[in-house]
Length: 163
Image 1 (cartoon, rainbow, N blue to C red):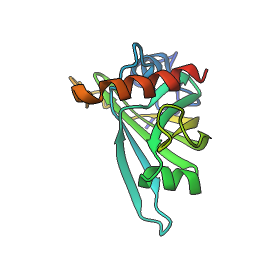
Image 2 (cartoon, rainbow, N blue to C red; image 1 turned 135 degrees about the vertical axis):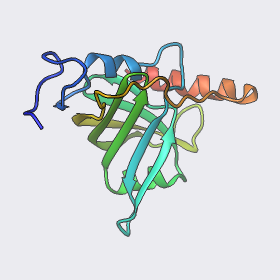
Image 3 (spheres, one colour; image 1 turned 180 degrees about the horizontal axis):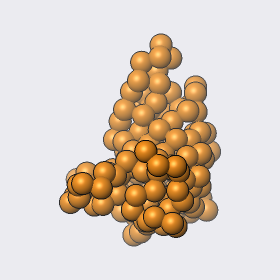
């Protein structure tokens, strides 16, 4: 393996970066209150057991800051509330990264639904997981069921309005 390179010197095959490179930021920068692509969030239970969960609400606020909402009774919320260490994976067309960071609760009860909380993740390191021999043609995408679309719109609007 070669030494670390910055995203600007080798756009597709860089190894690590201190913040989201432009193509990753754009993939996670939601517009029009979108809820995809899905982020896989990895946390650690209190007994040390690893836990993962998909989230459609995660969005990039800046190249060094991610934001999401979580149900307050979710294992991921409990783990992040107790221990802010987190790893977040993104797999979308031609982008595969894992982000290491620290999470914190910034709104314990969201205004649109008090059963949900808003969290932010400070990006500490971004690792490029792309392999030059493959092409990722699609990512994991979700959509809201029609009857829940207004709820998702309100959740994403609240996350966006926190800026």
